[in-house]
Image (cartoon, rainbow, N blue to C red; front, side, top):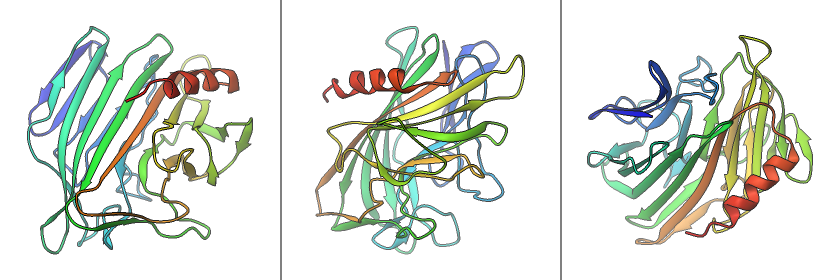
Length: 281
């Protein structure tokens, strides 16, 4: 594995020469994001800045509203996640890398920091699945309300999100209890997986799973997805209601993202859930 850091811009991880397994862009937009995101076999699953939602970029984390300010879309008056120092990179093993970032969530009108975040992303490459452990600690700098657009035919989203490539043939989202749905909209579960066929070669396929940790607030999380017309999944902990934090209060969240080859079934997903759930902070 090769890790390159273009300071102030991007961190890129290569598992093969000339091919980025994934790239963290933390310097070019209002929020850090990971794109491209490849399966172990090299298939790109992620999509960045699609024409329908320009602020969708691969794998990213934000909420829709913080004290009424929009941190989701990127119009004239929108909140920004600003990197406060150079990200720290550690490379403990040949197949592992860990990144720590400190971010300030900046209000658009005043320039004040409403949240301070410490974000850890650790990555391990595997034979048929790569693992991202995503841990975030958000500390309110004043009394804060985290909110969403209430769900009608859309809405409820905010938190860890993923936008998938257009050429990736997703026809269902798999949830625990053998539930398969075309579009999760508020269903609760410890995990959600989207898998499907990909172009190129002899019928390749791949998928992405997001796992919620039992230590998280509102576990098991509600899920929100874009349906067959838009490959999008969100661990939507605010789906049912907003969340308020007092000044100085911490919100800590842990997720595992598995980027895998093939189409995973219930037994593999449950085994991954059990493993992640057994790991305490």
